Length: 260
Image (cartoon, rainbow, N blue to C red; front, side, top):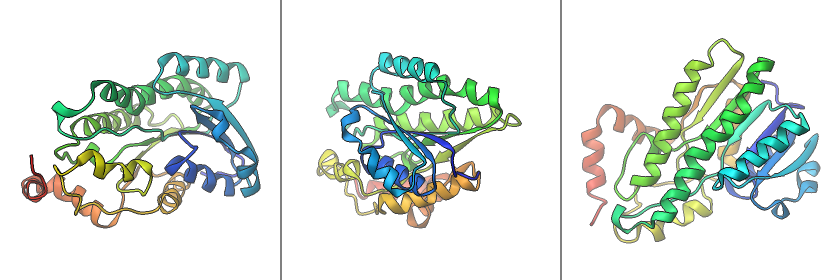
């Protein structure tokens, strides 16, 4: 896909990975549609200065179903096509299951999974009518490899993997495609919160990280190449392969890092 002048919608783009995605796509000359809870956190001139053809901010709170419905109604009224939808926004939960806050778990499942499905459900018919488009879903290696203290977050991301892999098959031959991001450690505020949430229960010796800009470059290249899945590369790809082909070995290694 040639991204120049394409209309790209990105959730959660006021910081972290979402901001890095928006900046990289601005350099590509895209028409940016920035979906955030608080529009005041977005500086449109920043993206225009990087080369964006245009930049529009939409108010969207993925933790609130009514907010998603309101956004979709406003978007349909504006009659703005979506060439690429990047479902990036996320919320992180971790810790022993009995110690996690139930309100946080519900919010995480709504933002990471239900909201992602809802937004895709709303945008997809217009893509299918045009016969073109791409849905990019931000999953995680936690969606395929399951670790202690990551039960709820992994459940949400496993749902993202299953949803994306399923609609990928539904969309064959339509001109619309998916891209599944198997995101690993990216140095964001969410990443920085991991140590506090895991506490002394799980050592993070096996976790490494890359910058949001590094991951954004890989994601944009994967969109341009019309890839279906983007793996993290390096040690994290090894961990994914180990979990798939030698799960017992991975579980043995993880047990050595876990202390209930």
